[in-house]
Length: 97
Image (cartoon, rainbow, N blue to C red):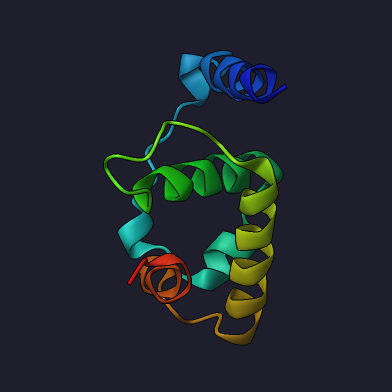
């Protein structure tokens, strides 16, 4: 099932038309921009953030249940702090100590 979910995400990312491809400089995004983003963009950003905060020796697995929990935390934090920059918000919420 996890393999299927991983392949589904990979397939969705690869099926995007090149003309629709845009660079996202998350270091300049605010929480307000994140909350206003479309569902597809949010999904891609959350998947990227999940990988960004993984330890180097962790297996390359997308835990969808954990991703949903993180998404809810980030959504709540961003709703309360719309002017906060996205990476600072995720550093506070997801950084391992």
